[in-house]
Length: 342
Image (cartoon, rainbow, N blue to C red; front, side, top):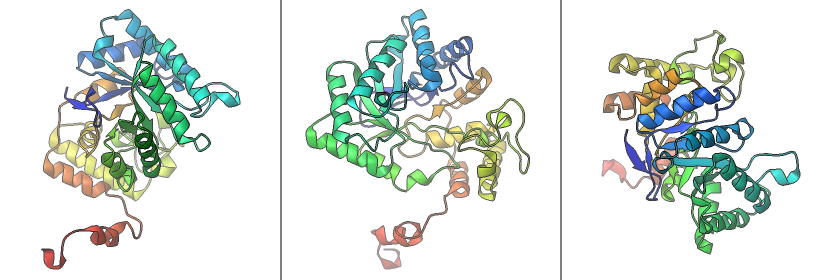
């Protein structure tokens, strides 16, 4: 397993992060313990959860696993998130100091630990002043309840606002950003990744396999069936079959299949390896439901695609850019190259 620093911090984490959204819902306690054990045995150290995953059960499972393995805590980095509803009352949602106080204390209690290594704001809150939740996390760091903090699902301008205001007040700055990013979803390269790079935030991409699409399990003009996420609900979420069943998607999948055939890797492993080496990426988040899926993902812990394979995937998945200031016109105008190629 390779290790990298998370953003501009000194926090070293494994190249792959174990996502635990399935724990307590699609993966039971026994299966979750087995995945956690296998991940650590393979050299994994980075574990991500959230207070709303299975209504807190995911955190409880991780806490139970840590309690039964008391020597493990020093080896792993625990990241969790707060922001979304945890009760039915108006005080139970958002990034207000009141809600974050309750959410952080509850996460610490469920996980059974003294401090969260990376506490992340799960999404932007349009109603709460940025200064309110920045002061909260700065206080939490000073109190020893949080070591570092990060953002999740923030856009470029939103993370810019957060960092600039934190700097203006001398408060703790975020070190990470958790966005959706994969071979089928690259539009964050326009604004989000440049902003994250400018401010030194390490990327922890979620949905690295685009909800299973990049594993090659789905077929053209054939609704998914069976014990898969789309097999159980073909139109589920952002990866719904009708939304993703496009020629652009199949062109990317064809390229992934070609690289897989030539490298001895599975399509899922190719997609993960490509993402793990994208500029700014620290650790893709693995969203495995089964031990078999996790084992396949861990096989690329130190795998890097060659230049030809990377170029093929880059070209096949390149997003069709909107008009100026993006696209060819915008890129050309921002270039420092003089006419004639000088």
